[in-house]
Structures are given as C-alpha cells and as structure tokens.
Image (cartoon, rainbow, N blue to C red):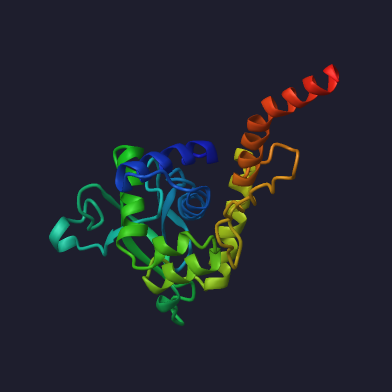
Length: 242
C-alpha cells in the first residue's frame, strides 16, 4: 500500500464503513496526506535504534500501520522480554519527542510499542477512528480545508508533537501530491476556504411578445373581440348591399 491511488481506496472504504457517508475530496486529501506523512499509508518500515549511536538494531516491515499509531510503552515484566515488552499485535520501535530531549538524549529518542494490523481494511478503520473519533475537533477541522487548523487540532489532542506550522506544511505538500497524482483539484490550503456553493440563477424576465404569459386583461380583450365578430360581419354585409 504505497501509492496515493491505493491509499485513497483504503481510506474511502474505511470512511464509508465507519461513518456511513461518502467523504468529500478535501476530507480524503487531508486524511490521506496525514497517512502518507506518518507512514506512507502503512508501508513504511519502523526501526528500533540504539539511542546513543543511532545504529539500526531491527527493522519492522509489513506492519500495515497507516497512521504510526502507538499502543503503549513496553513492559517486559508484563509481556516478557522476547517481544521487547510489547503485547500481542504490536511491535517495539523507536520514536522521538521534544519532551524527551536531554543532554544525554539530544535526539529525544524513546522506544514504544506500535500497533500491527492483519489487513489494510482493519488498519484504515482503526486509523480513522483514532484520528477522527477519539480526538475532539479534528474531524470538524477537515471541513474547513485548512491544513493549519487540522495540524493544530491534532497537536492539541496529542496526535503529534511537531511544531504546528511544520506539520501543516507537510500536510499541504502531501495533499498537493495526492491531487496531482489522482488528477483532481487541490481542495486544501493552509488557511482553508469554505466549500463553494452553486450560485442560484435569476429567473428570466419575460418580454412582451416573447412568450410572456397572458394577463387577465389580455384574456378579457380576446373574449370581447370574439363577441363582436358577428356584429362586424353583419355591418360589413349591409354596407355591401347598399
């Protein structure tokens, strides 16, 4: 699941299954942009690193985790050392956080258990539920089309710890790439725009003699002319005889 077209199919199907409605283009572009940013639609590898040397200790592939969704911190006492202290259907990998930066850990590295999914269908449904149902204001922000507002709401609900402007810019870049790849208009901007609504067309003003509806006075005049027709005929006949 590495292309924008494949990601779109998975996201749309999960949206319909979860919400029972068709998503808009801007909703699809923003949700797709976040997934592409976080894990390339679940196709990116996850690495376990040595925090001091930055050496790669292990690489997890085929995790089908489209949103870099974490489960919990490792607990070897509870889940055993064989799994790195992670429960079933999760795996241990390295992430980074500004709050973890210290003199001994300048990169802010920490190890955490990430979710692993058996199918992309299950993965995308969980991703949308985590992003849009469990975080207040994020789904509503999608309707604005503002990558900045979405990034801010995601930060406020602890989905990411990246500076908002940087994350918003990444969403914007990915949304533009999605639109170009799928041949559709870009529906996302940093500040967003309201959904365009069709402008109602004014009714045409009828002109006399061009199909304008007959008025009541027109109808009365027509009846009067019909009533006078026999009298006109008689007068014309008498004039001929004389």
